[in-house]
Amino acid sequence: MVQTKVNCRIIIYSTTLVLLVFLQQVYTFCPSICTCEGDPNVRTWCIGVGLDVVPIQLNPDVRFINLTANQITHVHFTLTFYYKLEVLDLSMNRIEALGSRNFDTQANLRTLNLSENAIAAIPKDAFRGLKRLQVLKLCRNRVETVHSAAFHDLRNLIELDLSGNALTSLEPATLRHLYSLEVLSFQNNQLLEVPYERNLEHLGRLQLLDLSVNLLEYVANDSFVALRELRTLKLGGNILTELDVGAFHGLNGLKALDIVDNNLTVVPTLQLSKLCNLTYLSLSGNYFEGLPAVAFLNLFQLQQLHLDRLDRLAWIDARAFVDNTNLRILTLDDNPSFTSLPLRLFHSNPNLAEISMRRNALIRLDAVHFPLDRLHRLELAGNPLVCNCSLLWLWRLTTGYGLHESSDFRLIVPAAAAAAALITAAQPPEPPQDEAVPVAARAHHGLRIDRDEIGCDRYEDGRRTRHLLRAMTEGDIDCPTHLVTVVSAVLSILLVLATGASVLYVLRASRRRKQLLTDDDDPRRKAGVTELIVPHPQKVDRLELERYLAQQQSLVNEYRALRAPWELPLPVKEDLKYGSVAATGRELAPASGPTTDHYETLDYYQHQHQQQQQQQQQQQKRTLSRPHIVFV
Image (cartoon, rainbow, N blue to C red; front, side, top):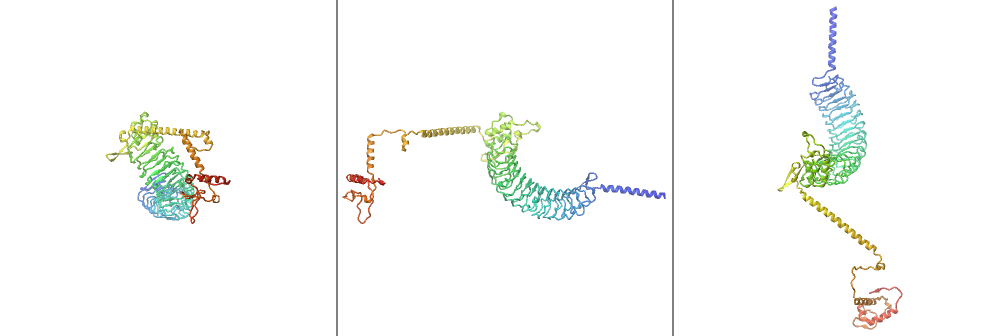
């Protein structure tokens, strides 16, 4: 009996011990193909181990599970045990359907990654119960439709990634309950228009919106008007040809705007002018032919501007960046039609520190083009520059020649000399020998240039050859010093002569004007007689003067008053020589013809002097007091 009791106790103790050991093993069980960390195993990684289902033998208190790169096809009834789960990564699997309420017990889940699967649709209750979820990644799937109530419980969601799917539109109110959403990505879908009405208009806290690589053709007015907190907007990779004037209305807080790789033909100056707080702008990959004056109107806070891959860009107005006083970084790379850089282009940009103009068609560059005293980085490689005098300043920067001491600066171009002097004035100390940096790469304020790639073209025997600037000597650059000096001297002399001639002309004109204004005592001017002033009067013959006055007197006497027909005397003896009446001077016309005019001629009075004197006596007796007209 006693032995039996002892045996029973042994069995009980043994069973209890086995149960305790088994329970402990179960509580801390971790599959051999997985990796578990924490106490007790609250973090588990089963990456690329060939699992076809979610393992159910993990610690029920596990908080982090990573099942990336497996062959899992569904999540039905496999997550019920892990009610404390906070992070679940099921990316790069073969999940085709999410089912309904499979995450209902994961009330503490914060991050869910379902990217790179084969999900085609998101049903109504796919995410039911995930009330604390903050990050949801559904990128690179095959999603074509999203039920309007699929995100109903995700009121605390902060980031939603739907990029890389096949969405063409969203059902109304799909995003209505995402009140806390801050990041939303629809990149690389097939959206035909901005899903604003009844969707984006409810996202008052949204800060980043990515609509790039879709099929958007235009942006209508007020497409983002309710997104007051939006800071970043990406519209690149679409087929945008037009932006309505009010397309960006309401985006007063926008900081970054990306409109790369679209079909815009003109800079949307008016549309962008409303973004007064914009600091980053990229318009690369469009079809602008030029940048007009004040192309970026009112963008006073702009700091980065990218204008790369503009295949048709041929010109830039010198005032294009006049409003961008805070501009720090400017890139103008890969513009094959851009051949010349206007002078004073960066005159209104005192904060400009980095300029990149690589792989353009620039032939000539002068030191006055760039604010060398302020730049930290300058990249000019890949341009077909011609080796001439205009590149001497750039040769000095790339080779470091003459930059060791301030007394060695003897640049030909005056502007380049001033710029090089500024570079030398603030040259940093020499680095250690084992960390030696070329002088050209550590110019003023750490100015760095792509010295190993900048080259220029020389024509030798009718052939164009490419040479690296740093490998050339000063004699290889076609820039004779005496020629530049002579040209400068000639231009200076011409300028002085032109100035002196202008001063003499102004003084002479002023003197003549003063002489005319002060000549008020001339009696002829007071009498109102306008005469030609002869500077050297000639001596007049007295006999000729008397003869001239007599002739004038005879002409005065030959004037004849115009009389009415009834005042004329009767016709008298006809003058045979002239066929006219002596008393009247009228022709004797035939009876059938009309009466001729009664104007007298000077020739008649010269041949009929006696008849004229009689007529003048009669005329003096019949003088009328009324007005009359006199003819010569």
